[in-house]
Image 1 (tube, rainbow, N blue to C red):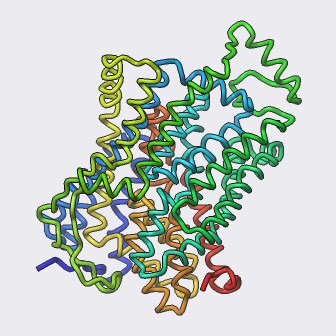
Image 2: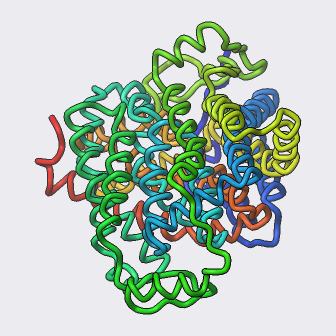
Image 3: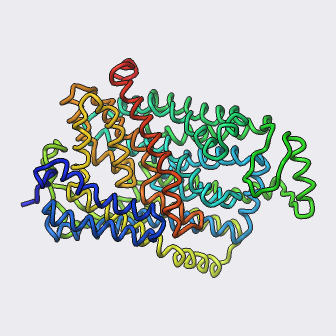
Amino acid sequence: MPWLQNYDPLNSQFLSTLIAALPIVVLLGLLGSGRVSAHMAAAAGLITAMLAAVFVFHMPLSAAVASAVDGAGYGLFPIGWIVVMAIFLYALTVETGQFEIVKRSVASLSPDRRIQALLIAFSFGAFVEGAAGFGTPVAISSALLIGAGFRPLQAAGMALIANTAPVAFGALGTPIKVLADTAGIDEMLISKMAGRQLPFFSMLVPAWMVCTMSGLRGLVGVWPAVLVCGGSFAAVQFYTANYLGSTLVDVAAGLASLIALTLFVKVWQPRSIWKFEDEPETSSTISSAIAQTEVVEKPTTTVDSTREIISAWIPWVLLSVCVFAWGLKDVKTYFDAHTMVKFEVPGLHHQVQRNKEVSTDSKPEAAEFKINWLSATGTSIFVASILSALWMGVRPAEFCRIFFRTIREMRFPLLTIALMLALAYVTRYSGMDATLGLAFTKTGVLYPFFAAMLGWLGVALTGSDTSANALFGSLQRITAERLGLDPVLICTANSTGGVMGKMIDAQSIVVSAVATKQSGNEGEILRFVFWHSVALASLMGLLTLAQAYWLTWMVPR
C-alpha cells in the first residue's frame, strides 16, 4: 500500500508551508552567507529536509532515505557527467593552446566585452541549450567567457542570466513536451503560448545583461548590437514556436542570433570600446582604440591565420554537432533501446502517491533509476572530446592525465551537486514541494501572476524546467479550471516563469562556479544573480496577468 502524501500535516497551511520552505531557506541562507562551503550548505539543507519529511510530513523513513539516494545518483549521472565532460573539453583546448586562438578570434570580432558576452553567453549559449540543455550551456558559456578574459564573477553571472529565455523550449523542446503530457494539453498550443510570451524576454535579456555589466550608459553605447542579437532571436523564436512546433526553437533561434550578430559586428562597432576597469584604457573612438591596442600590445601580439582559427574552433564545432545529434529523438531512442540499464529504486518505486489536490493521476509515483550511458548528453561531449583530442594531436597518455585531473578537481563540486539533487528529491517525494505550490493557489484573481512564480519556484527547487513542468503541470491546470482561467496560459506560465529560476537553482550555481574556477564562492554568485532572477520572474508574472485579463487575444485557442 503506497504512502499518500499529506500537504497540510499540521492542520495549518501557514505552518505547514513554513516547514516545507525550511530546507530551501537553510540551503540558500547558508549558501548566500558566504561563510559555509557549498557542499556543507547542501548537506545542512538535506538534513533539514529529511527531518521535516519524516517527523512532520510523516514520510516513511525508508522512502525518505531511498529518495535521497535516488536524487544523489541523478546528481552524479547524468548531471555530474555533463559538467565533468564540459570542463574536460575546455581543459583539453587550454592545454593544447587552442583556446588562446579561440580567445583571440572572439576578440577580433570585437574587443568590446559587451558584444563578446552577447555572442558567447546569449547567442551561442541558446544554441547549446536547444541542443543539449541540463546545465550544458552554463558550463560551456561560462568557461568560454573566463577563457576570453572575463572576470570570474562576471563570466558566471552573464552565463546564468543569459540562460533564461531559451530554457522553456530546452533540449529539442523537451520541457514543452513534458508539460503537455503532464497537463493534458495539446503540445502545439503550449508551444504557441510560450512563443507569445518569451520573445519579449528574448529582447529584454540581452539588454539586461549589458546593463548588469556596464550600466545604462553602457547599454546606450551598444544598443544596435543588442537589438540585432535579441531581435533576431525573438523573431525566429516566435515564428518557429507558432508555426513549426517546439523541437527546434532554440537551435534555430540561437543560430540565427549568432550569425546575425557576427555579420553585424563585421560592419559596425560601438564608438567607445567597453572593457573591465583593470584592463588597459581605450580612447573614445573605435579607430583610435584599435590603434592604441596595436601600440600597447605590439610586442606580444600574435596574428593567427584563417586556417589556425578554423582549426581552433573545430572542437567547439564537434561539440555542437555531437550534442545536437545525441539530442535527436531517433538517435536517443536507438541508443536507449540497445544500451540503457534501468532498475526500480528499492523502497521508493510505487511507494509514494500524490494526492488528488495536485494530480489527476491516481497511480503511485514511479522511481526508476536509468543509466543511459550511451545516449546521455555527457557522453556526446565525451565523444566530442575524443574527436577533438585526435584533431589537436593529444596523445593518449596526456588525454588520460587531463581526464583524471579534471575528475579530481571536480570531486567537491560533484559532491555538492549530489547533495543538492538529494534535497530536491526528498522535497518532491515527501510532498513539501506541493505544499509550497498549493500556497500560491490561494491568491485568487492574482493567480496568473503567481502561476509564473510557481514555475520559478519549481525550477529553483529541481534545477530543471522539465522537472518543474512534471511537478506542477497538473496542479496548474486544476487551479486554472477552478478559478475560471485559461489552462493553456496558466500551464505555459509554469514553464516560461520557470526559466527565470534557472539562474538561481543550486545545480546551475555550482556548475558556473566550477567552470569559472570559483569553487567555494557559490554564495557570491548566488547573491550576484538572485535579484535579477526575482525581477525577471515578476515581469513574466505581470505579462501572464495582463494576458489573462486584458490581452486575452494573445492566448491561442
